[in-house]
Image (cartoon, rainbow, N blue to C red; front, top):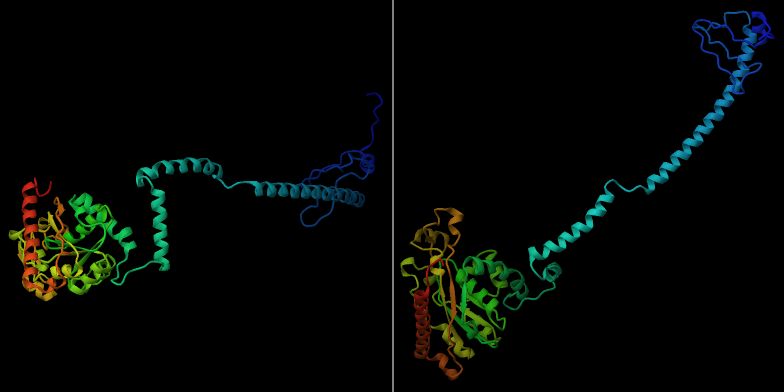
Length: 408
């Protein structure tokens, strides 16, 4: 480098072509964006306390620093504007992408939904059985009619739809699974027209009437319904009276029975009354007195056949070993039963024993061959009443002989 020329330090500082001398505490000088030239020297940082530059060229350097600062400001503004523009563009891009972004887990849900739907389609028929769609539709329709009041009851308060859809299905598991009732001779009830079914009564609580109602409802080939005549006590109990009315029961009086038979209904009566249902366990399956034969007179006037019905198995569900008569009088009840489980076990003692039942409907006894005035003949009523009672009693003895066990 033979052509190199040495420039004195003072001249270099005055011309701005060399590196300025740094003082302690000053920042590193920065060059302008155009790569350098005259006036591109960066100003020295001010000392603490607001002091100016220490050397003698303060004014000149101040001017140069001003020009460089202005240039840097312009360059910085351009850079900031570009940065803001880039930031806005990036924000807009993220916003647009965010609008198209699905929630977390959406893809997994889309993958699981078909599998879950297929599993439900396979499992529901197994759990609910075949035809569950139809049953679900019927249930929803029933609920809609209940809520809107779009259903009918007859003059006795009988709600046929509620009985078919709720009450009978509620007792059907007890009928089929718990008491395992065997039904015989239900075809002896005529398919059309009125009929009077006469049953024995037992069991401390009237489970036998409910099971007879389910037997006719589920097993008769013509889908007949048994309308039971119940005692006044049933309709004096809160909540029970409403269910009894809606289930088709009515008062055990001649007028109601005659009106039902005239309408062609199957009417059920238990002439023993409280004497039968509340008799002690030692007298089980021994029929009590059938009253004065009022049911026979009603059947004669309606010219309806009398169908004897014998029920085995109800006597043992609550073995009544005693009767607390004082408690019964205080509570206004015909009897207060004492059994091996009640009242000693409380509510658990009210659960009936799971005995094996048999319900048999006998041959009908016709009444249409008698003249109209026969209903007022006491001797005829007595003979027919005794005939029905003896038929039921002999059938009970036969079924007891055929029964293998109380529970099997």
